Length: 118
Image (cartoon, rainbow, N blue to C red; front, side, top):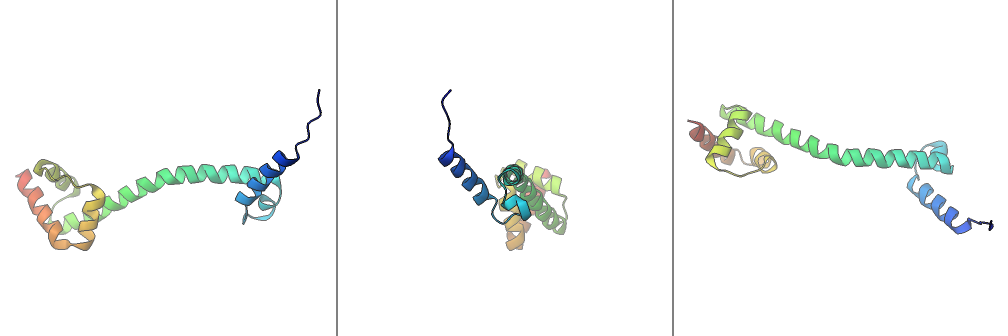
């Protein structure tokens, strides 16, 4: 069998791992095996975190819309049903932005939702 010398591949692999682990605590930023484990775990958390961010923002938008709806005297679920029946195609992100910045426009949307339900 031929002899294998791994100098550049091994060095590049270690450099990449340790560069990603820069700033980690103690051996996680110094030793290759510890750093590799920490980096893999961090990448896994980053992947799940990107998905959780979408959930968290959606729930935040719902909370903001709900608070504005209750000021208008209607529940969130009835408001969303009324908006759909009225044919207004605004997503929750836009509705939450309108609720936070322009109360009179949101009040008009609440009135349209109530009219569509009646």
